[in-house]
Image 1 (spheres, rainbow, N blue to C red):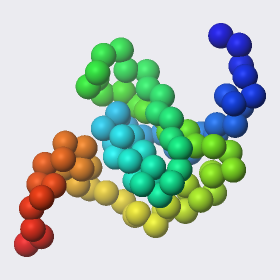
Image 2 (image 1 turned 90 degrees about the vertical axis):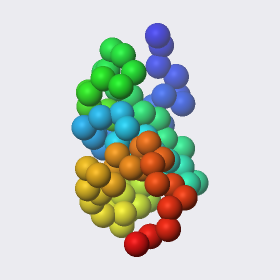
Image 3 (image 1 turned 90 degrees about the horizontal axis):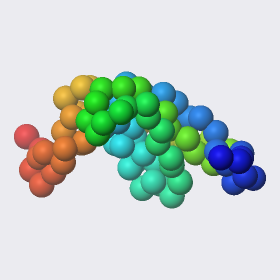
Image 4 (image 1 turned 180 degrees about the vertical axis):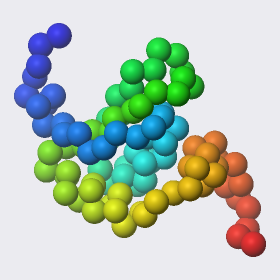
Length: 92
């Protein structure tokens, strides 16, 4: 596959532990108006493998700021966000 000019515009934002974590972070970034690509070496859907998030080069600093502002998620929070579990529940 040849590299096009649009391919060179994408920059690595971060690598995360798995696809669901990447999907949650990508959703948060997309909700803030950024375009995100996820790349993973997982051979099958659901396989635990690191995933890389890419954003446009001009959005890299903003994406880094958004991720930093979001803080750290616990494993339980990431699982809940990834599955949508409790999406309509009232907070305790």
